[in-house]
Length: 172
Image (cartoon, rainbow, N blue to C red):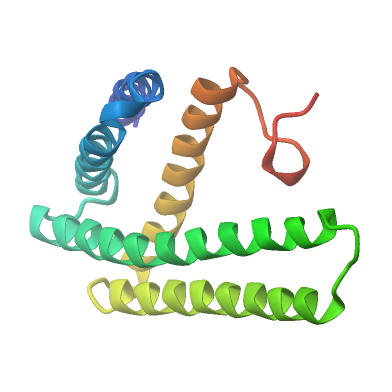
């Protein structure tokens, strides 16, 4: 188990270095982001094989499904951010238009519903590849993996090495 922890820590460190490089070279951001996401996929695949004792083909298929749904969810997350900016702009205006605010709030809820539906669809597809026991272990692994990646990103982008505070921001 310690061996896997050491491998995981080393691979996450490599990812952190890549994320740092991405932050300092915005002109090549898209190309670097793609390379980093590819590395994350490779890291995840290696860890799925080593920690969950999956074969290479199954691990590769799981990562492929993850990437497919991540792309779809990112479209919705971008829509959500744009909708939130529009909502903020409405509140910044001198006169508040309640109909427009209601419409944007409805849009936000619809986007959240779409994201939830995508997550359910992804999990259904993933669970069809794995036994119930494997899928349960995968869910635990995936949560821990993403938590670790988020912490690396937070540490590199905000310089904060600990837990996040309210609203996903580092405590003051």
